[in-house]
Length: 129
Image (tube, rainbow, N blue to C red; front, side):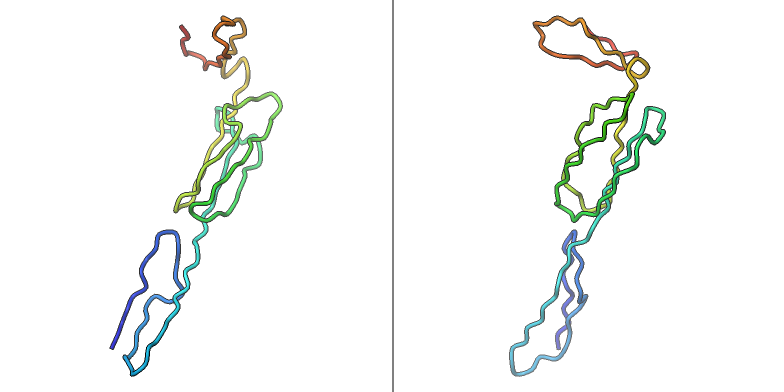
């Protein structure tokens, strides 16, 4: 007599939870088929008040899949997250891209020391030394 449970593999589900029966006089082979679970990637595009500025992005992916989603350009706004990229975990994932309004949500410093070779964007209330 045999009664064998199919092992759990994270990110996959099986078609046969248990293989059982009586041992006979010949070999038996059972195929348990595993299928990758799919998870939901959701990307929201909002302003600093949480208002939706653009239709959200939705995609269904398997755990371990990589994703590269460019953030849309929205007139009158800027974002520091120009590309949302990563590897899908073993769960649904929601990412929020926040857009700023120049002059309201941050101040751009245009006259910096050229020797630094950088552009600095700062949020209101931040200090630059």
